[in-house]
Length: 390
Image 1 (cartoon, rainbow, N blue to C red):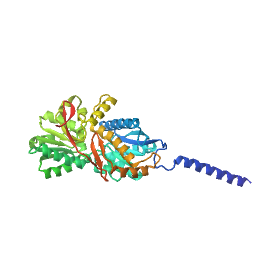
Image 2: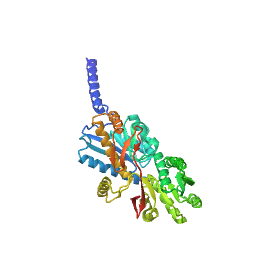
Image 3: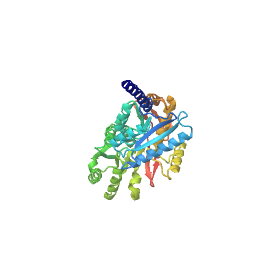
Image 4: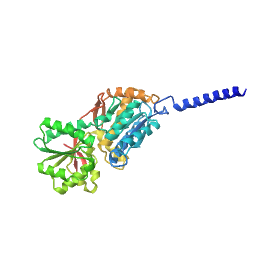
């Protein structure tokens, strides 16, 4: 009698436990939202630390776009919840941030901001078959896999485009370069720049390398450039090192034209009271805030109104476009928030190769390898602001 009762009790207990376990699984949505009334899009980037300028701009641009999208009715009539995590430009912390966002119900990832962390996270999104669109991760490896796409130009594309531009606009001029041989972003751009410069007949008189451990004193590199009689110096580096180079070059009396890529965006803020040292610095970019087209003007006005009169950088513009790209692909694919993460990804990656988006960073299409096709523009720093080159 007692044994019979205990068997029945155990059976009932097991059934109750299984019921709760199944309820807790949420249908096995592989990290998808438990709330079928909204899309959950995650974002990862540095909002503290040395690269915070990039992350803050991306976060702001994305949040502005989500606000507009929701006010206009959302995606396929569904509201969007944007969840952000700071990774401090650290690969391990970026992976941790990704796992945190999965716990928050993330269904798609808009990120990460910088290349190293993005390369680490893309391996995780591949495992989960989660759709990923990075606004600014430019390393080739940052979009490895058929589930990952980018808004910005890749490092190789920036190197080729820079050589093409200099060969056209500075024909017959002597060119030098300073690059970070220990950084995948910098060395990747320089490698393609060097090859394309040779093909275009651009005279590169000297190329000076530095590493992360020696990124404070550039006097040796600058002295060799001075001796080379270079007219233009190519800087495929980040704004922190660029600010030091401009400061030290000024003390040496080095008078050249400085030319860089998207990593220089932020050099004005980095220089602070010495911002005049950036006067005349040129860089290739897909976005210039003072462009006269209606779309750019509307975005710039909205951004300044939302963020205490801050002028948006290309990173803010890339993220703003990223959210509208996700919206366009999602509507093309006809996804719904009750779909699994994997099913959403399968639909999104197919739709990405079928859409054309006219964003503030240009009109864009995508190939199956995740790379965008669009036209770069040049801008110059004039009177403390980024200005389109006529």
